[in-house]
Every structure is written in C-alpha cells, then in structure tokens.
Length: 297
Image (tube, rainbow, N blue to C red; front, side, top):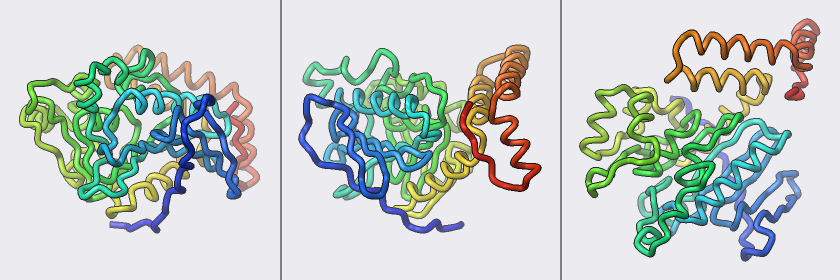
C-alpha cells in the first residue's frame, strides 16, 4: 500500500470564546482560519481545500451542543466560500490512549438535559448528518468512529481511514438505535448482510474490512489519514467545480431515485455545465494543452 508523505495539520488558535463567534485570522502562510462558534470546532482554508477539525480530544470528540453548532457553522462557511471547493473533516486525537475520531453523542450532555442541542434544525445530529450541501466533504478518520461518530462518517461523500480506524454502530448494546441515518446509510455503503451483522451485534468494522466492503475509499498508515485525504481533495479540486458538484448530486440520488428521475437530473446537470463559462475554458485549455483555470461559473 502506498504510504503518503506525513502532513501535520496546523494547530488551531487557542483564544477564549468572544462575542464574535466566527473570529477570523490570517496566518503568514496565507491560510485562513476560522474559529467556528469556539475552538471546539475549527476551520482552516488552504487554497481550494478547507479542513474542519473536531477538537474535543479529552471527551473523545463526543458531540455536544457546541460541537453541533460549530460543525454547522463550519459547513456554512465551506458552502459560502467561493474560493473553497472541497472540505475535509478530521478529529484531534492528541493525548488519547486509543485514538477516537468521534464517540458519538455526549452522554453527559444528554443526562444533563441538553439533548436537544445535539441536533440543529438544518443539519440534524452534529449539525451535519442531514445537512444539504453542494460541495463534497471527505472525512479523514484516524481512530474509532462509533455510534453518532460513524453516522457523521456515513453522511460524508468520501472516507479516508488509517489502518488503526474502525467503524461501528454500537447503539443496540445500550438499548438504543442509530437514529442519525446509520440504519439506512450503512446498508447502502456496505450491503445489507454486512450492515445487518454490524448493526445487530454492535461490533465495529476494522478499517481494512471497511475498505474491502466499499465504505472506505482510501487506506493510510496510522497518522496519515489527513495527508491522504488532502491528496484526494487536491485531485478533486483539479476538476471543474460545477461538474463535480452537479455529478455529486446525481450519484447521491442514485441510492433512492428511479432511472427516469435520474435521467432527468443528469440532463438538467448537463445543461447547467454546458451553459457555464467553465465549459469554454475547459475546451480551450485542452486544445492549448495547459491546465484549465476554473472559475466555478
């Protein structure tokens, strides 16, 4: 297996929360950083790619109200930023004895009566699992993604995982059900038989098996998931953004729409890209044998 070169994510600013919940800073490298709600979820844009980091390592990155609000704010920024075409979600696992991407819902928050804040009106659980968007999001997983953490993974478009990762829906072990999309998204991703076993036993699926079943797009060595996800995002960002976004919508709809609807969606998408400025640029760049300068319009 190809081992990508190690890439270290830039550390987020550790400033106390302010009245401006979306404080911006510009680093010397030209990277734009955004503290989404607080430093519990961070946003960093570098060129065409934005990295969103779940930043509660001391709580195994469990989702509380601040995480849900912060992740929704970060996705809002991704969608609104015309300069960014692809998003990556990762998690800070610093100091954890066994790396955990996300342990799901914060049970302490639920026990304290704060359960409603774990969902947002537009995004559902974690402000993300049902969030409509046009830009692709890759998850870079370097540890355990369980329960709601696995459902965050399933809501993304592409999954890059290190070999120390695992994916599980453990709710049945606690007399709960996976209520944030896992019960129908996992069968779509890995097939009914494998999903049924994972859901009814609550046992996690190791990364290598998740890769063989089709849940994981790329495997990486431990500590290399973000670097490999960045490589994938860079490859995507070399393509015409409008064509990527329109194609993504049809691929997602293929899981539940009939062929007639999908044919119409495909034709509509084709009309949009054929009438765009980027069509001429793509053809001209091909003829002139140079990289295209996409504008996303």
